[in-house]
Structures are given as C-alpha cells and as structure tokens.
Image (cartoon, rainbow, N blue to C red):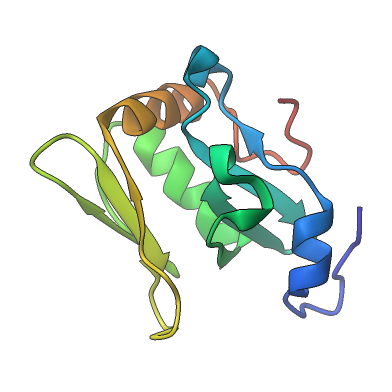
Length: 130
C-alpha cells in the first residue's frame, strides 16, 4: 500500500488500485460503506461499486473519531466528515470543506452494517482486517 507520509492526498490512480474494505456486518448484501487507507488519509466510498464508486478523502484522525462517536451512539459529523441522517434511516457523507466533493448516499441497511462495524471497532484501525 502506498504511504502518504508527507500528507498529500492519494491520486485517483492510487485509489483505484486498492479494493475497498467493508464491515463484516454487511453480510452478503454487498452494499455498504467501504474504506481504503493511505497513511494519514482514509478514502470512503460504496463497496459494491468498486473503482466506479465516488470517493471522499478524510484525514484518518477525523474518520477514526467519527467512527468512535458512531460506536457510542452519536449521530454527528466530526472534522472533515460531514454526515446527514435521513428520516428513512440512512445517511449521507461528504467532505466539510470541499464544495466539489460528491455526496454519497447510504440506505438503512448500509447504515445498520456501518454502525455495527463501528461498534465492533472495524473500519477505523490503521490496518482494517476485512
């Protein structure tokens, strides 16, 4: 895996070379939040779309704190991670200070798998296992 110790965001070419890691709670549905780690950056997208997924780039520290808060039952944004929760039980993610960033929409099943994964400590370590 490419390490970005100088703090630079990974390039699109680098992002597409790695597969997404997803929560073990997503089961066979395939539809879920996917992440890719690049040193100080966490890339977030939709696992089932693979390299066709729109992606968001968050400082890993912000992403890890966002996941920790979700694990504690908070529905909140943190740092660069902007989350909005829908009445249907899903949520959206985008980058707080990048007006060009896509807004990725996740449904209730994706939220449920993500929340369970966050509670289990998945998707926020420096070396995801799934």
